[in-house]
Image (tube, rainbow, N blue to C red; front, side, top):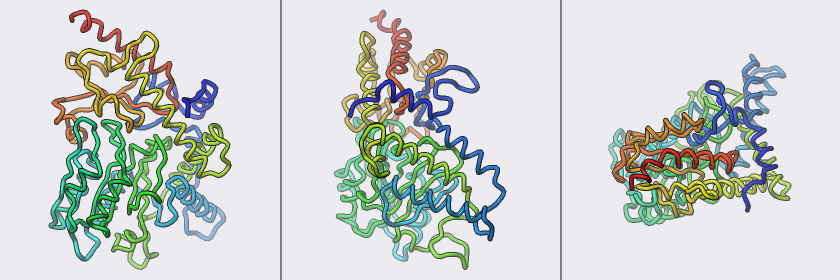
Length: 423
């Protein structure tokens, strides 16, 4: 598929709040999407609508019945987006909180506990949870090394570490540091070849806004996203749990409905705003294809998003017109490697003669919002092996444009002219 036309880009951008202006600092280009995507205007309106409703679910009145229906409809929308024909969807405090819950249940729930496996590329949302609960359960944690050059972990790497006594495995779908996706289905097959009954939990938080999710194709037991990174809002996460994971002894209210993951009264507005995201993708899929059913349109929207973002990242890496790309800058390191076909809308880079914090500050002064990733508990697992103490993350989304990429490249050219002149 081709990148979006100017007309479609304009229509897309018109559906998002604060697409080119920060309410605190004024005009700006937003390349900090991995830290939280822009919010659909429909999500803002829906949030306000449901925040004003005093009624709760489970009461004998029309308002309560309407809220129950909104939640049921949203769960059906979730099933379409994730392509899940079984299991349960529920919301929680955040994606991180939900990963901890799923992983805790998978490790502590079975009567016969075994080893836990995960990879070094994972975000601490899954890796910390797996290591903590493995220690609490008194079982071994097996660490699969990722490839520093590609920023990925492969099925082969899992296969080399796998053992038949593994009962829980975690997988990162896409790295928020490198922007490189991992092959979830292939890794799951490698896990099940050794331990067919293992519970497999996937962190899909970074991946969800950049392409399709297809739970039916993965053979997994849990998948988690953070909707504020996929055009919704802060304040909730969404999890899917397989029926066999739900059949474990989950934390729930005594005497309540069996298999109920949710704690207390949930925010109906959270569910409703996820439906807004699905409706948006349905609209976008209809604009870029002739599909008529929602799932097919979601798939078409994902393919279109991926194609547009690839055009943006290629321009960022290799340049536009007479503007050189990041790969032309002296002393540059592109995390994950420039020639990586699994990149999803993100380029993280470092220059050996210009500190990352100065680059981010300078871009910010030019009205271009990016983010610094430091070798801390969030990103040290990726940066430290590369000998980097920090890097600049430029995270794009399908509502960004080539004109915005051009502005960043121009700012980088001006910023690095003294370096080039010294050589």
